Structure formats: C-alpha cells, structure tokens
Length: 178
Image (cartoon, rainbow, N blue to C red):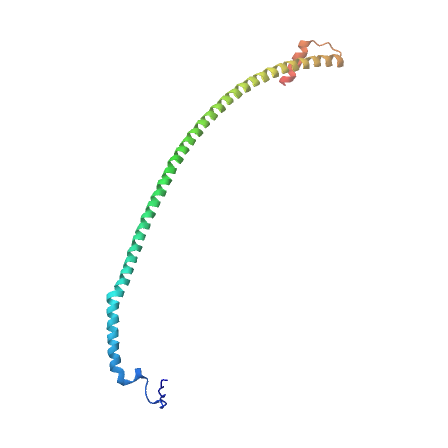
C-alpha cells in the first residue's frame, strides 16, 4: 500500500494578490507580451496577411473581369437587338411598299370602274330623259287633243253649239297661253 501524503491544511493568505496583478511579475509579463506581440506580428505580416491580400486582389480581378465580360455581352446583345430590328424593319418597309402599291393599283381600278359606271349612268340618264321628253310631248299633245275634244263636247252639250275640232284646239291653245 502506498502511503498518501497529508493534505496541507495551512490557512491561505488573504493578503496575497492575484498573480497577474502582483507588481513583482510585471516585468516578466511585459517581456512575454512583447515577445508574443512580435511573434504574432511577424506571422501575420509574413504569412497570413499576404494570403488574405492575395485572395482579395484575386477576387477584385475576377470581379473586374466579370464586369468587363458582362459589358461586352451587353454590347453584343444591344448590337444583336439592333440587327434584329433592322432585319425586321426592311421586310416591314418592303411589305408597306407592296401594300401601298397594291392599294394604289386597287384605287386606280376602282376609280376606272367608277368612271365607267358614271359614263354608263350618264348615258342611261340622257336616254331616259329623252324618252321622258318624248313621252311628255306625246302626253301633252294627247292632253291637248283630249282637252279640245272635251271642250267641244261640253260646248255642244251645254250650249248646243256644234264646234269643230280645229276651233276647239284653238280655244284650248288660247287658254293655255294665258
């Protein structure tokens, strides 16, 4: 069996200070602080910060390249859009010219058809007016003879006078002239 050491039951000095705050250790603490700072500064400046700076620089270059590529692609897209619009504008203009030509041709055909129809209608109207004049003249002659016959019949009946057709026509003409 092994012997155990007795536990130190001596009272703890209440006056003793916390070792990091004890002024007797300040010099060694400052020394190790300076050494630790120098080592960390050396490690950061030689190894870690150059790697971080390189990564940042690489990322900045990649972003600049991506922006240049995007600007180039945007320019290509704009050029493609302009080319597409031009390719659409040429057939559209050609179609408008064809449509305008077809419209002008149709307008000319319609105008010619209207002129022909107007000429036919004018000829028919002149012919109809001539027939109306003839019919009117014939009707007026007929009315004159009917009026003369009626006047002769009325005179004979009312007055009992025998009137010739020539005298009755003269009397109708005299009344017509006023």
